Image: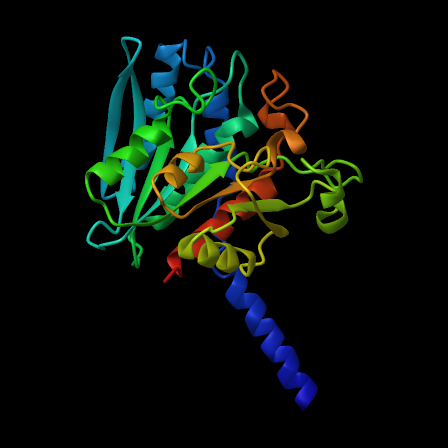
Length: 305
């Protein structure tokens, strides 16, 4: 009798943790094709194709969100656009989930960062008509890549600054930065410091939650909830900002404005040999595991308190 009760408890727990697995891999694949297979490359110099991507994101957001708009700004006489949509707009505190849609140079940028953008699109679909504890802003950023990385022309800097200037009550921010590349073979995972493999292993088979020391309440709670969704193998990493790679995405600009923020990543160039290269195509991606990352984000944010 006791063994039966224990088994029933285990089964019920399994059902609960997977009940909200809603990411549709066919939709994920469609978005990846549409974003990566445009006629040219969505980099800062190809403003026409960069804006074509922005329009695609806008039109997808518009199907699901309370509010959708472009945040436009000018750099070197060219107009660039963040694309923003909102859910739960009546709630007081805001959570930002962001991903950049531009690429570095002349390449498709499937993992970097079409995967993050598709994550936003799927989250928008899943969040429609949901009862939420916070206002969620999904933001697709422009100009994350060089030559504008670490400058005030980054789309995420423009957005983070606008939050501060408008006195928006921001609980925290999550950056989706390359979430689609995985390898199960040994020695497929590198680190900025070699001995970290002793703690995290040398297989590139997990997603990472990257935090800085003094991460703040939001990043701590989000990381704990995400890991306990159990959809995908997850490892948390916390370190100093000076460690190479820890601030290599849009979350760095929210840190600058005192906002608790973290990055969700497959670790980029520490794992993916196609980083900033023409080999970064959707054929190299693990769409199933990428979808499980999106499910983990969704289940985390709808239960976040």
